[in-house]
Every structure is written in C-alpha cells, then in structure tokens.
Image (cartoon, rainbow, N blue to C red; front, side, top):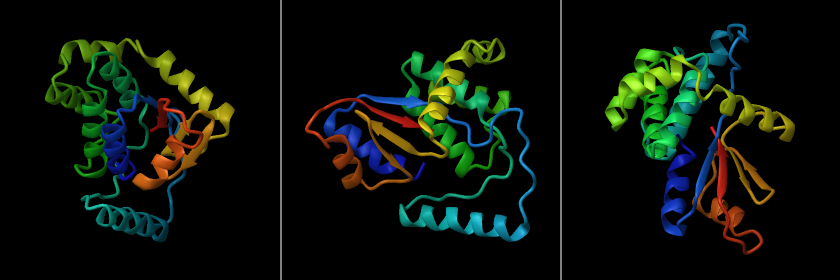
Length: 185
C-alpha cells in the first residue's frame, strides 16, 4: 500500500502499463511460528510510522496469515478490468480495516463493492480458476530470487521495497525505454 502511492502517480503521469504479479509472504500451507511480543510491537510501530510518512492510516493486521485467495481474486479482477480498484480495496482491507484477506466472504464483499459480479467472483475463487496463474507468478519470483515485496521489475532492472516517485521514474527510464512495469504484491 505504501509503495502504491508514488506508483499510482507514475502510472498516471507516464501512461504506464502495469502488470501485477502474485507473491506470497506467507505461502499457503506453511504455518509460520508465532513471533515474540517485542517483534510484533516493533512491526506494528514500523507499519504505523510508514503510514504516517506517506499520509496513510495503516495498522498491523494479525488476521491475515495467508493471501492465496486474494491473489486469485486479483487475477479475476484484472481479467474484468478492475485490477487497480481490487488492489486498492484489498490493501485497505488488510492494512486499514483489519480484515482477513484470505476469507471468501470478505473477498466477495470487496468484489461487489468495486463493481464485480459477486457470484461470478465467488465461483472463480471456489473453482480455483486462477490458481495456476498465481502459482506461475510465485514460481517466477522464486526463480528470480525474490524474497519480499514490493518488488519492481522494468526491462531486467529491479528495485525492492517502497520507492519514491523519483526512484521509480529512474527505474522506468533507466535505459531510455518506455516499457511496462511489473510489480509483485
């Protein structure tokens, strides 16, 4: 969410074609051990501080441990022309509204709120229609050695972490080309 503010402005200013790729910080089926209380306190403080820096209200969400369904929903939304609205709504659900973004009911509500057909969306998730695409993105990230997000790729050049508008613009125009921008979320 934090990295999306300058990214959205760059996309608008430079008329960029943005391609989102799936990435799981906590892979489905892998349970990560509980973190110590001091780690959680530091993580919460860091997220809130970053939010303040970018003028966003952000909080640490302990409800969402996985995101596979949200990633599959993103592929559906992108196929139906609602990719950006979906990403914004899911980021808000995760970082502002403390919702579980790996919950079918939550995601179906989000889909309806942004204008997608809720029954079609729900069926796409239940049938795992987009699972293969998500898994291909995850495999690609593994092959590239990507271990965190956001991660930006432009014509073989990369940047990791929240980036300023200027840094993203430099990445985009690194060799004078005007190509699309891939971002893993």
